[in-house]
Image 1 (cartoon, rainbow, N blue to C red):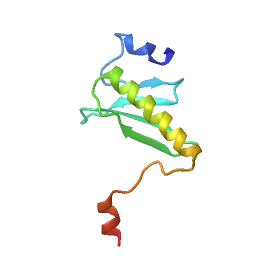
Image 2 (image 1 turned 180 degrees about the vertical axis):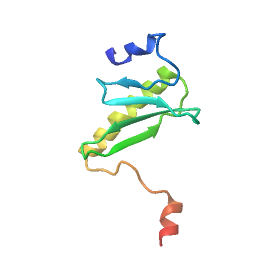
Image 3 (image 1 turned 90 degrees about the vertical axis):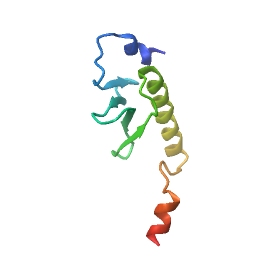
Length: 93
C-alpha cells in the first residue's frame, strides 16, 4: 500500500490535490463540492473524472483506485466507460 503513504502526512492541505499511483490518478476536492473527485488520463488522451462519493481522504482514495482499475478493465474489454441514463435516451429520440 505504498500508494496510500501520503495520506498519513499532516502537511497535506484540505484542498490540495493528492497524486496516487505514481501520479496517474489525481484526487481532489472542488471548491463547491462536499465530496472528493478523481481524474486520470485515458489511453485515448482524454481525461476521465468521477466522484468518489466520500469526503474522507482515505475512503475517497480507496474508492478512486477502485474507479481507476474498473475503467482500465472496461477499456481492455472494449466496454463503455459511461452509459447514458434512460432520460437522456428518451429525450434524444
